[in-house]
Length: 589
Image 1 (cartoon, one colour):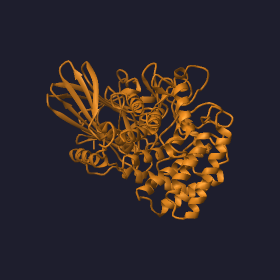
Image 2 (spheres, helix red, strand yellow; image 1 turned 135 degrees about the vertical axis):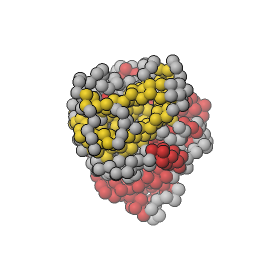
Image 3 (cartoon, helix red, strand yellow; image 1 turned 45 degrees about the horizontal axis):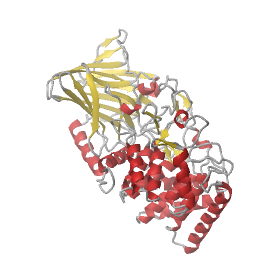
Image 4 (tube, one colour; image 1 turned 180 degrees about the horizontal axis):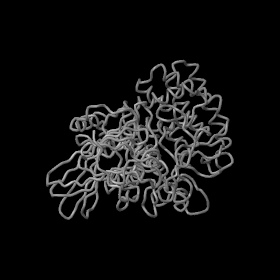
């Protein structure tokens, strides 16, 4: 093994590309981790070995670590996914012709080894591209060390990770921590680059890149079903692929691939969503069940069941993908995405969220309806129902994670969950008890949280409206024709929507769009609610408007800034993709 020559002069030019608007980032993911790729061919975000591990590439939030493949020519950027997969093609139209870079994390994933595949293709022109590899571990604190080249293969350490890079034999070392490569391709020529990262020593045998591409293509074809019975089947398959890409072997689906992306510039609302929210996973399982698919449903049930049996009535709102408690928040010491700061961890462990038990029961009932609930799942149903018995009178933080109150949505979610669970109960006495408790909670909530106009209000002490109050009518807390449901929807459309965009609740006296972005989850809830009340034309209009609130890679964030038509918040937001799947299924009926 020989050490390559090192150019220790000052690293020329900007080390990492400046961040872009969020709509221009694509996601490649393998279930255990995910990378965001920007329009200049930069891998701007990747954590290894799992979602909540420290980052290796973090230029998205102001770090220097990045891995770029950029044409050495003026270009217009575009791209597309291979249908029903998270195999992305970055596409650049230059003055001379077209270049593409096929990108993927090898799928299905190995639990600890990330394999990032990048296949550059000069489609119809001779071309030159600049490649730069500069990983920096532990959120940009630790540079690459022990860098060696042997037989054209680079190896190094990046913090606790082992690195191997093939395809860059002619790269030069810059400043001891970066590899730069000039690629010159003839028209029609392809070039393969393969980056491996792992906390364990890498196997001696080099990866067979051709085999990895073939296996990944076939695995995605097997993982994503046709879903052609609903609206917009191609888009729905893409949404499902996003959910599969965000879902670990444990069955846990992270809420988003990223951390620290602001909901609002300098508003302090930037969070770490690289964890599994019980509510979000339950939403996704119910949504996929509406499409008649079972593999994702089984994974969701497995994860939620394990957490209920593990923690009982002390179920946390969120966990790591391995079922551990979420660490508390800490500052990362990087500049952050513009308008925010870098943060890891979340305060979620400090909260009790009653609705999680109701939504978990809806998930488990959906599995039971497909005869897919095993004995552990049935035990989990009893645990969740018992938790509601013991805790439904307690104030909770609710779906939006606010100060504890007896939130109306939380209690009605418990009602819906108990009613759903009763369909899965084998004991008639237990079924009767759960239905009686559901009736009791509903009556108490109606006595204290029904607005004088006949609609639901947010809590006994808050007369305001809330998008979450659309859920009880969708989930069976009350009958479909219940007048409180219709009145709530009418008031919501009047007071919390503008020009076809929906908002969670009124934050203050400012216009809605000045206080917060439109919440894309809520747009799909409106579509589903209108369909439930048999207003099919308006439901379809809301569905189409909401699913258009994305960029070229068709990834949804949490919020949509309607003034600037920009995505806001962490990307991609899983529960928005989930509700898009559910709306596709239910609006086609």
